[in-house]
Image (cartoon, rainbow, N blue to C red):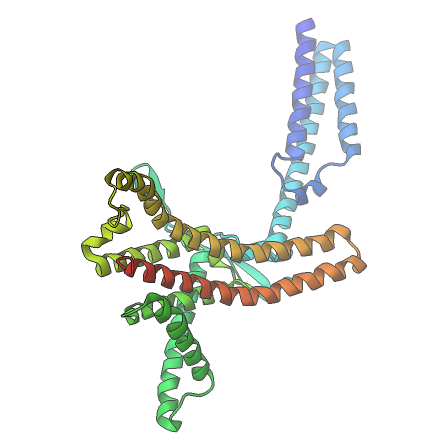
Length: 377
């Protein structure tokens, strides 16, 4: 009898716990908690379970039957509430994806792409194709396209289309009136400034060989930055993987330029040896200390390039998100004026930052190429 009563208590308690878990699934987002069962429902179910337990103490078979009946009813009620919460969660998730969050999609990567759509949020999520990962030993290589990959491809297309269109217009206008005009004139002024004032002045002699790469880098980063400021766009340069790839490419160009310019003297950029000193032991001492510094310096340069671009392109969006969050935190029209104006000012500043970061990345790569090519001097 005692064992049966204990079993009845345990069964009823387990059913109530299962119902509670079904009604409020673990890990549910905050938006779905509004659809959890009310406190009154929980108390009602607790009373029903308590009554079943009391009746089970009076009669074993009847109590077990009643407890089972109430437990089934409670479990069904909890399952229904769980399904309702799950549906609400899906609805809330769809609502947030479509138009609830307007800042974070500009800097986060995903396998969904927002496109214009005639709906209440003027947007629709398009799921990008997913490919089976390629297994390389114990490593899975996923080549499925993401939102940032699409933005990088779009930046490449825009970059090529803009420059090719400007080149064709420049040629046409030069034959017609002897000089470029309009859009072609603006692109020509930008190209000449970057080439003459940024690349050639820092790379040094025979720097024209690096002009195509550095100009392509400048315009590619510029378009990628700007795509993160427009609706339905995303800042691919706010992804550390993207900036790291750009930095690795710059590192290869810098080191290969040094090898070609210095020949066998390139080893001097790795192993420090003060040849102008006469004290042999001091030479060895300085070499042992400064050679690791020289080697480390080769990797800190691309690291700084990657982190600088990533951090600057992410920070602006996060600041805007903080200001907009203040509006909803205080919930006052009077307080909203200040954060709104500050967020607007940051967005205008980000247009300038998009151009500035493309300029700084190109400038630093030019400086690094010039430094390693002139290391023998």
